Amino acid sequence: MKVLVADGVSKKAVNILEKDFDIVVKDKLSAEELLEIIPQYDGIIVRSASKITKEVIAKADNLKVIGRAGVGTDNIDISAATERGIIVLNAPEGNTIAATEHTMAMMLSMSRMIPIANETLQKGEWNRKKYVGVELRGKTLGVIGLGRIGSGVAKRAMSFDMNIIAYDPYLNEERADALGVTIGSLDDVVEKADFITVHMPLTPQTKNMINKDNLGKMKKGVRLINCARGGIINEQDLADAVKSGQVAGAAIDVFTSEPLAEDNPLRNIDNIVLTPHLGASTVEAQIGVAIDASHGVAAALKGEPVSTAVNMAPVSADTMAKIRPYLTLAERLGCTAQSLSDGPIKDLTIRYNGEIAAIDTKMISIAIIKGLLNPILQTSVNYVNAPSIAKQRNIKIEEIKNKDVSNFANLITVSVITPKGEQSVQGALFGTEGRIVSINQHRVDVDPHARILICPHINRPGMIGLVGSILGKFSINISGMQVGKTAIAGTSMMVLTIDDDISQDIINEVLKIDGIFDAKLVNFYAM
Ligand SMILES: NC(=O)c1ccc[n+]([C@@H]2O[C@H](COP(=O)([O-])OP(=O)(O)OC[C@H]3O[C@@H](n4cnc5c(N)ncnc54)[C@H](O)[C@@H]3O)[C@@H](O)[C@H]2O)c1
Ligand SMILES: O=C(O)CC[C@@H](O)C(=O)O
Image 1 (tube, rainbow, N blue to C red):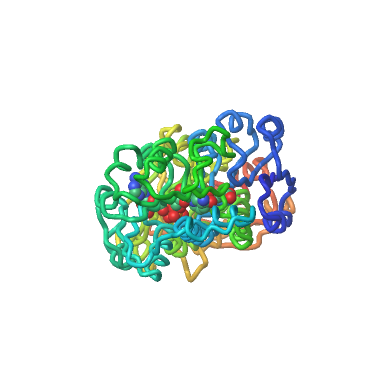
Image 2 (cartoon, rainbow, N blue to C red; image 1 turned 30 degrees about the vertical axis):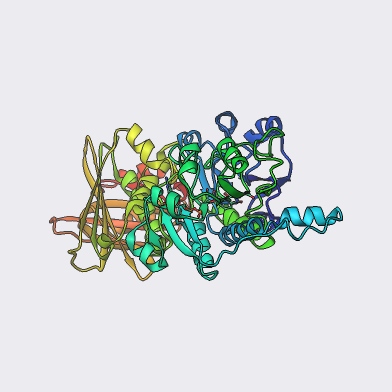
């Protein structure tokens, strides 16, 4: 598979990806060139310069994953990607410190007018009276958006003896208490703060959140910082407020249009400090985001779950650690259920019993659906598109959880209903090892790998030998064997693990054996 590393993403990404993929590096990529070359690629990693628009996605016939080496994904059309089953992932933590420190640098350089003092001194002006600044100590800092960067800024500002008041409607109280900040409404922040810094994504709710109206309600002489996204603070309104003296200074790293337009109203105003979107531009951050994004891209291309995917239900690192051991087993149970079923699946019931019932199982269920659909579809089914493909195919999905369980600490039961009846398979985790523990009520203990041939048969001597000799005749090696018992009188379940590919003709030979009720091949390589 081929991966395009664009926008000057650190070469660390290449080092990680080149072990498994063909890598092409294009530090500068025009919109036209991107449209032309995108059909060749299975994966792409970008910073903020390349715009992955609906048009690009429409031409991206092989694209499976878009990795953003950074936090903001506003340069990527996520809905268009989701519709095509393309995973979009970001690197949310690698540049947090860089953006946090840049915010502090902007706040300090604005309050001490360092850029203009430097510029004039370089020209030979010794102007000590003109550039008298203000202290941070004792001032109130309003933080809007108390996520990773906002809380980092709040923590650092406290060490400057600033009082913090924050507005974040999605913040839970425990987190606010742990940070030791006062939480208020947007109006509280607007009216009480001496400095205001914004740290949320640009959304329809946050666009122009700071505008003429609330700039007018702020303390005269307030100072503003935006190292989040251009447009959260209305640029024209801010420029007017600085010129009128209502706002004493502003420090802005991000703009509505980047690179900065010549006619941007924030240009050429002494009390405004501008940087060209440098928040994430540290050596450490660029390495961090490149490493995180490329690990995500590699995982996505290998069909593994991606904890930083932004077009899937988010999974915390804690939850991920708990569910990760179940994912392969879950996918294999889905694959087994598909192979067992005769005809189109109408209903899928997933039961979680025991310890597993207490955790967030959303991603485990998606892994089951992925395993169920991948063997039968041309489209590659992944963690993003699996639920919508199941929906398109009218498969009704039900999840049932119960902490009660006997014999196992945890148990996953996958049952599918087709017009011909119900099939079910159960799996459990032993340490980190997943095993199939029952197939259609027959107790087994199978390591689900390679290929397995499942043959329900009459419980009488010689059946295993008969199947074995047919496989032997075709030089098919059996590397594992299990016979499962059931309470149903007279039937047994033979499960043979086979290393080689096996054709339908051979399966038909097996089916001819008197006493063999069925023979279903599960090919785990097809998942
Ligand atoms: N300048 C840069 O180079 C640079 C670097 C990194 C991140 N960023 C940007 O910084 C911003 C923050 O990043 P982060 O990693 O801290 O994100 P985050 O997801 O950790 O935090 C965002 C916070 O904003 C809050 N929020 C969402 N909508 C809100 C609203 N309407 N009002 C108030 N709060 C709201 C959320 O609850 C969350 O706590 C993002 O826009 C990101 O793209 C910029
Ligand atoms: O790639 C960059 O330098 C910008 C990154 C930053 O804006 C982000 O959202 O992560």
